[in-house]
Amino acid sequence: MGKLTDKVIGGIYEYYREDNNEVAYRGHAKLTTSRTKDSLFESVDSFHRKGEIFLKSGKYSWTVFRNNLRRPFGKMLKQRVVVEPTEMTFEELLILEGKWIQQGIKEGQCYLNHDSNPLKTFKRYNK
Image 1: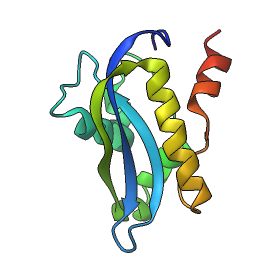
Image 2: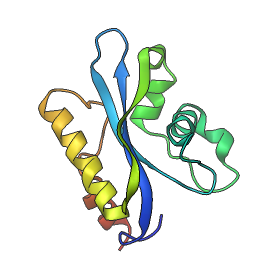
Image 3: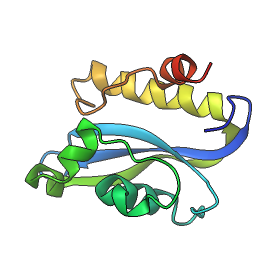
Image 4: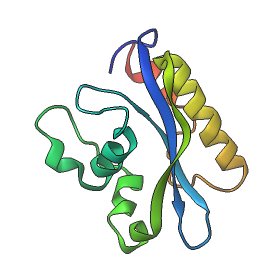
């Protein structure tokens, strides 16, 4: 996971419905040793849709969002970039993600996000 003060290259993505452009989910992605800047968001999509095949290292948590991607509903969801990857601290990335999620919730969207404050959650579980 790293520390909040770590410098990362990260960005924000969202999953939207093809039929009505409604945003169902927003999240962040950051460069890792297995992701390049060019394939950052494609790697994230693969991990969300079939994450258990990546279990060589790390954990894959089953979430409401990931479960929905594997249902017929998930075939309507496409990913797009909201904020292009740029250098920032991990804390800044979590704050940015939270702002985008909270904006979506105010608009009646982001209904597959179970966490509207990723920074607060990170601090709770990484003391």
